[in-house]
Length: 98
Length: 101
Image 1: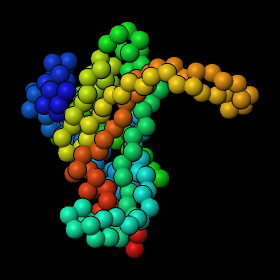
Image 2: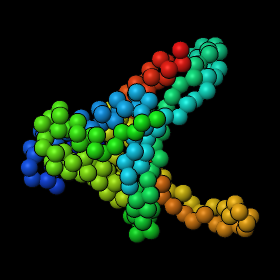
Image 3: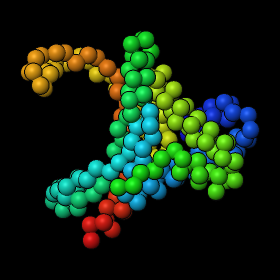
């Protein structure tokens, strides 16, 4: 499922808003989530999961073209931990043979 | 570390898009529910600019009860993994840059 398919599905499930409004809403939610993580803030959605940042230590890497060693600084990467309901439902899908 | 929750997301939809509070709350609920329901049906979710939610099937493997040391197999299962997109990774790294100084 892509973002545009998600927008269509949500539009079909509710009656008050136009698909244009739903599109704006989905984009606003995703932008809000990206902003939060970029500001070092966690995201916690009960039954879905939580997003946080994991630190990666500085390391020596190599330029794949020249083979030269380069020093890479430490950085943060987004991390997602699925919540209980999501874990159970996805695993149930497997048990049901999907 | 403060955390972003559904109610703040709904609040933003109310402030920025003028949805009424009930509509805003409903859209936020539907957003997460539709992603869950898609993953439940073993379908990947790709949100460009943010990231992809992928599914991986794991076969049964040997495990141990950490308290008793007793061997118990860990059953086959399906798990969700999140792969952040380039755009999100770049934005998050920028934060790291300012934080390190």
